[in-house]
Image 1 (cartoon, rainbow, N blue to C red):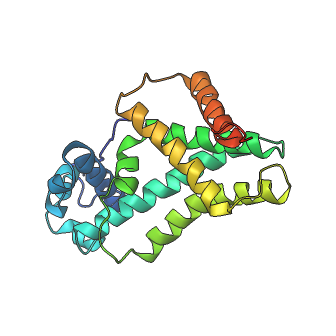
Image 2: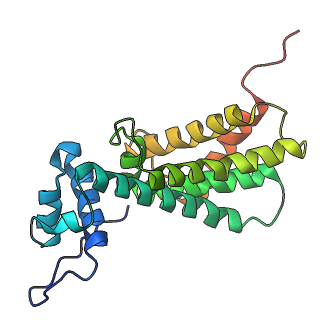
Length: 212
C-alpha cells in the first residue's frame, strides 16, 4: 500500500509549487482516513499548508475536488491495466484478460484510497463532470475491447459483451475488496496472478455441470 504524501507549501515560498496536485493528495488523504465527512476545502487547504481561500483557484466546492480525485483514480486504474496488458504479446484473450485482472488488482492493493473514491459511493449526485465520465468510460472500455475481440475471434463464447465484461470486472473487484479488507490472506505477485487465472478459468468454464 502506498502512503499518501501531501506536499506542503514551503514557509519561505510565496506560492505553492503545484497547488492543485497538493489539494488532490490532501483530499485523498482526508477521504481515506475519515470518509466524506472529514473532507472539506478548508481541511485540504490546511493539510497542504495554504490559506483557506487558495483551493478556490482550482475547485469551486468540495464536490469538484472529489471529482478530480475520482478522475485521477480512474486514470491510474486504466494505466495499471494497460501496463500489464503491454507485457502480453500473444493474442490469446485468456492471457490478456488475466493481465487486465492483475493490473486491476495491483492498482487496488497499492491505492485502496483511490478505489474507495471511485467505487465506494463517495461520488454522489446525477451530474458527473465530463472529464470524470470520460475517465471512467475509458477504464471500462479497456476491458470491454478485450472481451469483444475475444468473442469476435471465436476464442471466447458468443455471449453479450457487456454481460461478460461486467462478470470479469465484478469478480476482480470483489477479490480486490476482500484482500484490502483482510478477509482473505494478502498474496504475493505470483500468487495473485495464479488466483486471478484460476477465477477467470472458473468463470470461463462455468459453474454448472452439463444438463442431461
